[in-house]
Length: 199
Length: 199
DNA sequence: AAATCTATGCAATTTAAACTTTATAATATT
DNA sequence: AATATTATAAAGTTTAAATTGCATAGATTT
Picture (cartoon, rainbow over the protein chains, first blue to last red):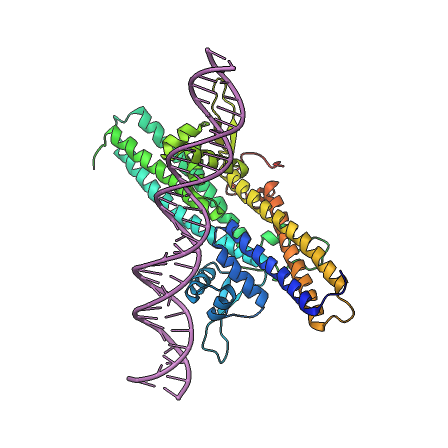
């Protein structure tokens, strides 16, 4: 085809941008969160400036209530924050503009929650086992003793695994991960936006 | 309370085991997969030997068809495999018994898929932009030129991010992650089950 | 403190995912 | 080849999650 009209070109460009945003949204379910989270992330990111619930509702065609819920969730996940805009009464929301940092936030917040739930259960189960051991009289069947031993072993493995995740999360959160897997390919002098000191 | 009956103790032990299995299942949605995946993982893991679809259906109270679907998904995620049992016609399924390795498999397989999808889109968009640039005649508006430049920048950022994830996945898959975040706390002489050479 | 605009909690509805039933294809056994 | 038993596919149903509309509470301006 020959030289296009400007309108047609702008239309094509918009389509390309939309495809990127849509892919961001899709990828979100790998983190176990709703795709609407990704859609808003994409919209605000592409917009380059803070946006209000009304603007988001306009862009998505969804209800303002839903926008409120999702932005709240995104703030809980540490991938969005409110930004004060002088002269405006509305709340404005921004998102982290560094993809990698967004990945880290999503990864660490969700796994921290998992680790915490696990630790609670572990404590409870250890107490329970202690009581069981005390309660098992001299006449306790060998089978019972074996099962208790196996359960303790299981709990130890389990705890070791969660301890690993705990340290893994810390490794990401502190930014140490960038020392071993830098953002840009080796050969570039400047390997990341925020420097090594993250936490 | 005083010394319990053996039946009561076995009952308590079983409850504790069930709670662990239930937690494994719950945690699965952090990976973005159905909790049934986690439930089967827990059941087979606790069982310590390969199981058939019928046995799984018995344990869960779900249909055999569903068991087939989920086991297929688990094999796609590299966290389960078929095991040939001599003399039996049925398929028997086992799961990885190392929690950490299961984590790695889930993490790497899902992100690999995401990276692959992204690369396909990226290629397609770059072609499109090239065509746009060729098609923009001498009379192309400055706005169009700006938008194209911005889109290219966006695509570069985007590609850098996915390249990072790509290398991150490799870092996990190769086992190098264990060099920087070992499975057991430092102080233990033996830091992991499979040694350093994973891939 | 009344009026006006904001964001959010809650019940109701829509939509998507999980799961089951039924039907079919594949594989082994006789 | 006929039979029995397995695994998978397709369509239908149930259950859970996402989304909306309405009602209310919190601010801000006048």
